[in-house]
Image (cartoon, rainbow, N blue to C red; front, side, top):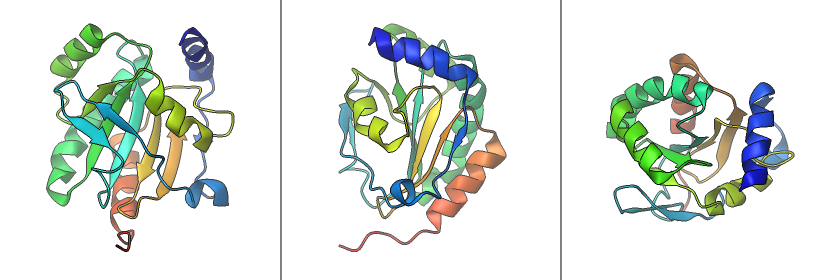
Amino acid sequence: MAVFLAAILIGLAAAPMLSAASPAVSAARVPAFSAKTLDGHTVSSANLAGKTYIVNFFASWCPPCRAEIPDMVKLQKAYAAQGFTFVGIAVSDSEPNIRDFVRRSGISYPVVVDNGAVASAFSPLVSGGLRSIPTSFVVSASGRITNVFAGARSYSAFKAMIDEALTQPKAAK
């Protein structure tokens, strides 16, 4: 975990856009993951199948993470009726800190305090591994990763990615 934390801190300075245009990323299926949320429910790739969502790796102490959260909260409210959700994956943080941060920020989407398992599942999808936060993975209803990016995003950037992902066809059963 200490190595992951050091890599995150180093990576914060260099938060490039990771293009989903490369065949490896745009063709990638969301990795299998499952974790308990702060409210005791399970969030997993299986129970999100057929839905559009964004997996967002963050920490309460991360300034760029804190900057994008209010826009994510607004977008969650705006798109929840369409079946969209954010899934927050807190890394290198304590559960008490995350609980307080979630309460103060008004976060209504599922949040997990990761023990490293979810980060390990997503890390192979990023060249060089998951090294910086915030890092987000946009998943279409077909279960395909449509976009991967590191660094904070604005309301309009998130909205455009959500709108694009919602237009993707659902997975065949």
